[in-house]
Amino acid sequence: MNVNDAPIIVGLDIGTTKIAAIAGRKNEFGKLEILGFGRANSTGVQHGQVLNIEQTIKAIQAALKNCYDSNPDLEISEVYVGIAGHHIKSLQTRGDIVRQDSDDEISIVEIEQLIENQRKTFIPAGDQIIDVIPQEFAVDNIQNISNPIGYNGVKVGANFHIITGDRNAIRNINRAVDKSGLKTKDLVLQPLASAAAVMGEMDMEAGVAILDIGGGTSDLAVFCEGILRHTAVIPFGGENITNDIKTGLGVLKQQAEAMKVQFGSALADEAKANAYITIPGMNGMPAKEISVKNLANIIQARMGEILDFVTYHLKQVGLDSRQLNGGIVLTGGGSQLKHLIQLTEYSTGLYARIGYPNGHLAANHIEELKKPMYSTCIGLILKGYSDYEHKYKEFEKQFKKVAIPETLVKEEIVSETLAKPEEFVAETKVNTAGRKGMTKFWDKFKNNLLELFKEEGDKEM
Image 1 (cartoon, rainbow, N blue to C red):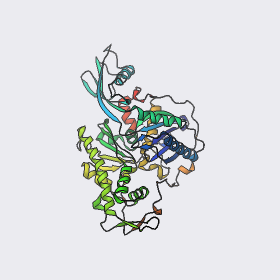
Image 2: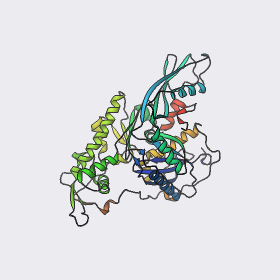
Image 3: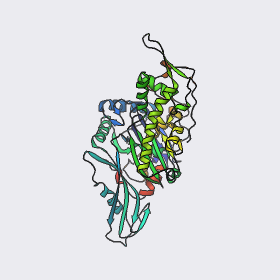
């Protein structure tokens, strides 16, 4: 692909704790060159839902300003936006159509009609269909066909995974984006975007569950034999852990966040029993000593609850370690908790690893962009390129040439944090060890099913 013939696509991740805007373009090797990057603290979002539109608009504009500051040559008008929240639901349907002429080859028009018919599926009042994703097709008695175009037969049908969300929640996201001076090119379920960024073809075939642990929600997507089998949004995330620490240990929220990041562990057995964190007293109050063991107990209790939800969802769809040979891929900001891999493996009985969005990025970018917290945003850009490369949506014919800014190459930038831990947390007798992490999904996922036809689920709402 000639870099000058490719569009610049922008992903906008509207999260509970942060809003990130990343602009990217594929280079001649098919890797993403990041042309702009900005983030800001999020204040109008709770549990993945936009509740305060005005605060969300300010945060989006702040993230956009930082993105423009990183590269003044950028012009951003359309964005791919992630959607999550506990209002997200999914259901399985089956659809069939009887063909008029069974001797003719199955055409794109018939497949489009089959997908469009699923948009008439009954869903509860107040909900709206976000996406219709074909899983596997059947032509007459031939089952498990990934792409039926070119076959002939009397009847063609498919199993579908339909994703729905609350109409008002979707409207709030679109309104916040519109009032920020942008247009929503498409809404994408966040775990699917994250999966695009961190998973490969072998993961898809082997069977894998991806758990994106964000600030307000933990998003789950399960794949088996190259097919999306299940999606779910668990209404707990890193913010819940921070609030548990705040309440349980009687500290400020900023102090709780700093302790979680610096000294927190997801396994209480790995925390030293005689290690303490000293919190300086305020306004003449005496300093407070916090047990690292107690801190780990609080974190493990909440993370264990999130993982219990994961186990529940896997049982609901009848998938276990025999079907999920790829195990669980942890991503999102919350995946960086120490000893989380061990807790996940203990709780679920599945192999676990951290998913980084490195595989699709050009090699010369700053380390900040390769953190798991940006998996969703990188995945949104990849989703846009899937639309562009397979002509699912219309894009401008002329693309502006924009260079990669020096600030996003080689030199590492300091990421924005909720608070500076050194201002109010001092360590005494504590030594925490770091955790080792491991490191063409979307094309595999979409191409297997929609290689030659337009995905109706990508229509604008």
